[in-house]
Length: 310
Image 1: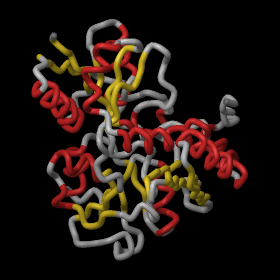
Image 2 (image 1 turned 120 degrees about the vertical axis):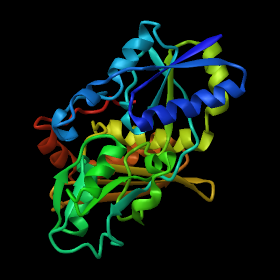
Image 3 (image 1 turned 90 degrees about the horizontal axis):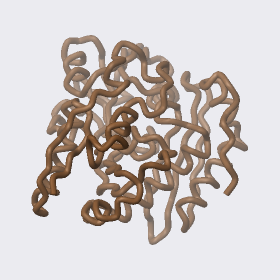
């Protein structure tokens, strides 16, 4: 049976799609990749946080999936909205790469040693907020484009440093400019960062079974916890919310951050539990009590969407 993978056309997205393609071919499947341009690919001159479109990197791929033009979609999990439409299901969450963010610079700097007023590039409010907590003096400048584009802008001297996800750089073999792997307690990653999501049409049991070998139980549990928190806060992938769950001594630990983009307020919460859904909701509720709603309302420009009670 021929399996058609829907993917964005960036170098990283194609690496991810080809990675899944290779694994499926080793299982005897015929596989081809269909490149689909998404809203996020078309809007390249505006900061992601100002676009404000949920699913900006997934909507057109899901449309192709629904219409039967592709059979499965490979996404960076952090790009996938937390509430999947009823027509789709998450067939697999792959083993997670390093979830950290990393600092890249033309000089051997760390966040602490970058000069005062350094121009640091990022497209993420989450990264901006946490950078400003540590170094209020930084000039945060919008940085868009694929990994190669961002690295070219750094090498051209447009920025003193840039912050990117370790996972993408590692997959592309571009870790040579990394000066610092930023500890997660300094910069809490995006929910799902480092994991790939394999999306299929709901109810396709045959394909679900064929993809089951790609599903990593720990990655699915930890990222579910993170995504439940994100959904409970009414957030998408472009808001200043960080979430990282891990398994420690058989228990699930969730660390989360909500911060103002200027770094003037940062709310942190960490809790331990057994059930990823209950833990994600509990940490979200604690952050709400600390004032997360007010921060997020300012960013959304409207009342935070209240989550449905279970």
